[in-house]
Length: 179
Image 1: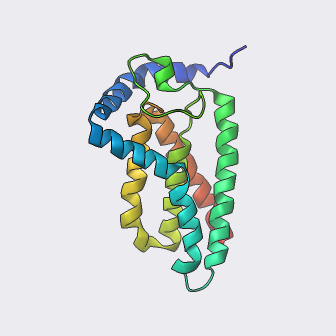
Image 2: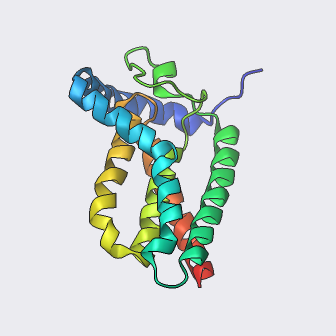
């Protein structure tokens, strides 16, 4: 038997799909589509691994401690994300609505919450606490990652907002542990 998403998602899907469809429609423009795909690929893991590994070089002391903190926080986020995603089972917009094109292969069937956005906001929050001078470079990347999820037809807007809220919450919860 196929898992069923909570009824609230069915209502949200109907409310959000016209906006998702409009945002996804912009991806017919090749430069924009290439930008969204690049942002999505960066948000997969490379930028976050680079940020973790850069911590010792960015801080005179305690850089290895921060690298470990960022890595462990990311692992907690992944575990929480998988737990939520496999329990709530909200199908991706391109699966539910034929008018939304999928412009990038999806890893799975479910969209809630956006893991890419969760990690982007989580790392931006950690950077704001420890290396705020990096934010002017990181925030545009975070915004592009979030937009890419809807623009590529992989997520609803509420998936992205929930991912951002979860990432922010996990980062804030972890900050006292950073020392």
